[in-house]
Length: 77
Image 1: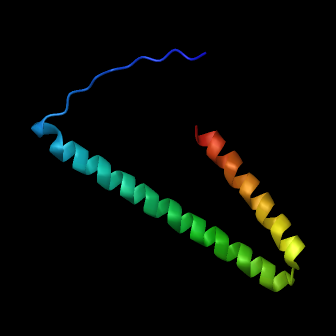
Image 2 (image 1 turned 90 degrees about the horizontal axis):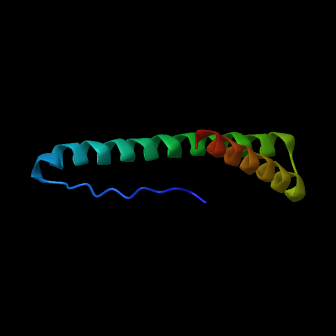
Image 3 (image 1 turned 30 degrees about the vertical axis):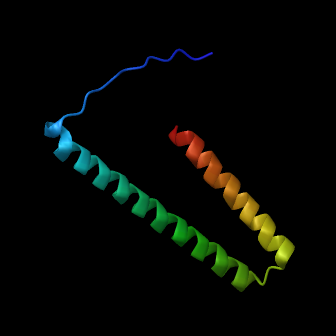
């Protein structure tokens, strides 16, 4: 069982700049993650093409890569 504390934070007109900066930072982070994911997929596609992997081997490679990504995500949290 987790202990959770609920806090009510009031946001006023003065916080508009801060909210804008946070939104921009989130979008920048998403773009960065998309770039990394695209590079990973390109690397995998090249490996599959060069190695002339069949469908089963390619699927296994994708499963291994998915597990690596999940492990990395768990390390972040």
